[in-house]
Length: 162
Image (cartoon, rainbow, N blue to C red; front, side, top):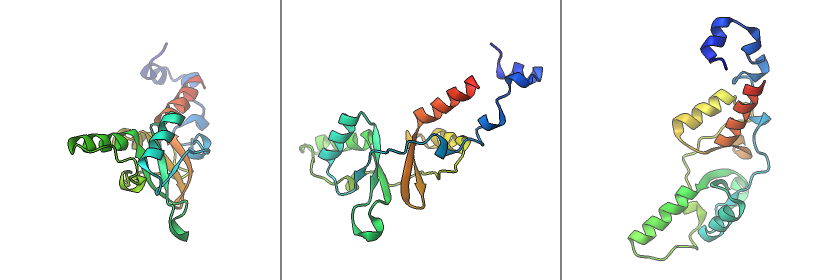
């Protein structure tokens, strides 16, 4: 198996990926998940945990639920980490699990999103610099897809087979 440096030094066209496989040529819309499981901001922590566990998800986008302008708008992400912070806080304060707290109070709102035309390189850069597990794909402020680190790895694997 050749290393990348050996392939470049050899100048062999057979070791270069086709132009369509360049990270800047592959766009989010080509590999994003479009059937996205999500929560509404007014759902409870209890509902959210049931959803995450039953669907075997580590996090989901949260959509607006109130008002004509915010309904369906991406407003946050709720992750396992966010849920565990609630458990730790409630244990520290010697309280029970606050199952009825709304997701809007617990979700992360510092969002890093991309558009359907964002390239693979830029998406990988977000994952490596922001240390997040998923990035929402938005058109304006509406959620149209989701990309996970696993999705990027799958595309990288496809590139290696090309």
